[in-house]
Picture 1 (cartoon, rainbow, N blue to C red):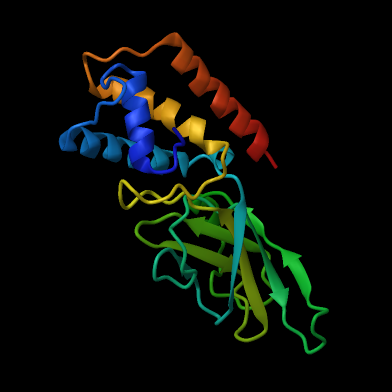
Picture 2 (cartoon, rainbow, N blue to C red; picture 1 turned 30 degrees about the vertical axis):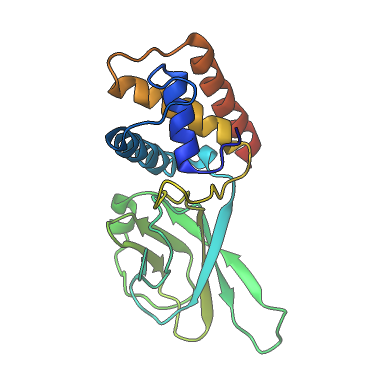
Length: 218
């Protein structure tokens, strides 16, 4: 049976731990619990760079602001990331497309940013700090890039979207299918006291994670 929906993954994982037999269907309560476990697992994966198959770069024109918000509805309107992977600013000149990009050095902690004495200095930017606040993160370029002269480009891990329903299509590369059902089986084994997790399933989960690590390394 092809695993093309969350419902397929859940049923396959429940069979793998002996909760369902061939041809049986899970109760609605079991589906809901497993669905929550599946989405929780994906939420955890978004923290790890090696679980993400690519990165995205987003940009905005600078306004001279002290910081720019990152997250749903923010200046960078994307799912809130946990960290900033890289950044650069682009000097806007009239000779398009010959615009020059300058990398920004990432300050890794609030303590590093706090050591800047004059945080409102406005000139050629050198550094950037990302505060992964919730629900909106904030990026602080420094010195402050002036209005209309630059674009700020930020690179983040792409976001693995959690599922909205049991029957939506899996929109992930095919190498994620085995990672999903095997690791979901491990989580469901912790939920169902009478379940049985075979060493083969555990080995498959570890091997599939290892292959993702190799495939996603950049």
